[in-house]
Amino acid sequence: MTVLARRPPSLRSSGGRRLGAVRFVLLLGFVVLFLIPLYVLLATSFKPLEEADPSRAWSLPRTWTLEGWRAALDALAPALWNSVKLAVPGAAISAVLGSLNGYVLSKWRFPYADAVFAAFLFGMFIPYQAVMIPLVQLMTKTHLIGGIPGLVLAHVVYGIPICTLIFRNYYATIPDELLEAARVDGAGMLRAYASVVLPNSGPAFAVVLIWQFTSMWNDFLFAVFLTGPASWPATVQLNNIAGSMVVPYGQQMAAAILASLPTLLVYVLLGRFFMRGLMAGALKG
Amino acid sequence: MPASEPALTTGGRRRPAPAAPAGPPRRRRRRRVRAWLPGLVLLTPSIVAIGVFVYGLIGWNLRLALSSKTTDISPAHFVGLRNFTRLWGEERWNLAVRHAVLFTVVFVGGALLLGWLLALLLDKGMRAEAGFRAVYLFPMAISFIATGIVWRWLMNPAPPERAVGLNALFQRLGLGFLANDWWQNDRWGMAAMAVPAVWQMAGYVMALFLAGFRSVPEDLREAARVDGCSEWQVYRYVVFPQLRPVTLSALIILGHISLKVFDLVVAMSGKQIITDVPAVYMWQMVFDAHNPAKGAAIATYMLLAVAVLILPYLIWTLRSERRS
Image (cartoon, rainbow over all chains, first blue to last red; front, side, top):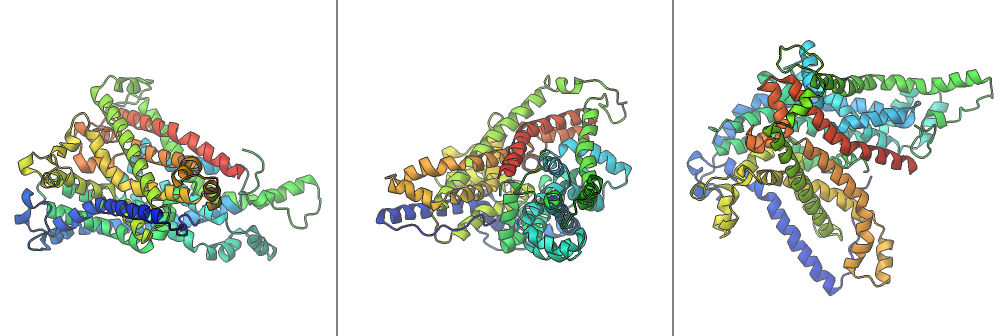
């Protein structure tokens, strides 16, 4: 899956070079446009309350302050912790499940495995509103409503399709001969998995872990339906902070950055794998 | 489903049982069952989970949508399509649908165009290409809620003397005529709402298209050049036609995201009618109006809209995978 292999630099005629310069300038222009919201977030978050004046909307702060950040952290800390408790175990469980499912669907296929896979895939695209009301009723009956375990359960279950898809496509590249050799040595399904497939799964695990971590961290829909104040993750709390009109912009922006930092870090450090997860979402990779 | 398809299926039933004696058929069948049964067992928890949580709950939701349970305590008798048809008599529902359509057109069109343009600019390779790609893609890592907070500031519709955000920037740059009331415009507000969504998803489309551009073999382009095509003609007649599958993928991915739009609208404007969409309407029916039947009917409409888009795509993808 070398999705974005570089093209070798093309022949350089003088016209080509001029065109290259135009392209470079255009791309740079888009970089500026794309970074405007980031500038606003950062600049505003360090502004003291006195500078929250429209005339200074686009200026850098005259005096840099951390008061917005401190207030945002106070308001957001429990929710951030809830998000950690949601996204870390959630991503781990998803990855293990996805790996086993992908293994079966690529190497231990049973009759109608394709139909089962197709039925899984549809679950990836449905608007979750279409299951939300019954899900809330079900969670209420099982007393899972309002807590983090229920939210983890929902994310893991509705994450099965994409995790299975990524692992299945990845395992399709493992040669059957390797598994065959393990079988000849008398290994059963699980032994073959542990000795042949699992050791070769590193990249797929990275993709799925990052994908699930990011989508659980950034989710708002499930959280707003399934959790209560004590278990609100960062997105819900962030929306509450921003929704109450009394909170100054500086604090709102600082809170938005704080809530985005973990996924941004993951993206910066592991962007390669993040990309592959995105491409898998398009099925055709 | 066909009995066998080569290439991708590397599963048990294709494997010739090693040194299998041509024994009586029944034993052979048992052996074959023994070959795939463990896999089915291992997959069973997920099959049950998807069966219950996806298909079971969709069915449950549908039953609710067809019932008379229009308050939390009213009984659930079957009332047919009443909840579905009544929605179309409501101004609010028609408005929400109109908003969703306008948002979808602007968002899908904008993200496709911008992503395509960025990929085209990057296609030939560029100094610091990885850096460019990283900048265009980073918004994808952020939640719609955080995006909404910045963009609500950027698209603040306050009048000139109190203007912040883009309106203030426009004035400062002498582009005051560009200042507008953004998402609070009651006719075209949803087009403005689509701008942050384009910002967030254009990089994704760029990545899709870039992969598409680069999967066109260099020989093919070279052959066209030898035949006297200008560089633009190479794109026009050789590269672009090859991008149809990628374009379709992008269109469908963006389309189904768009039909479900929820977080962004909530973060930008809360529950204001002026930016109402089906997802927000449904949320209010559940939490504020306590009308489960109506909420379920709206959710069913959303599912139908997505299914119309996704089902042909899934079938097409799985078929072409089988062919390859």
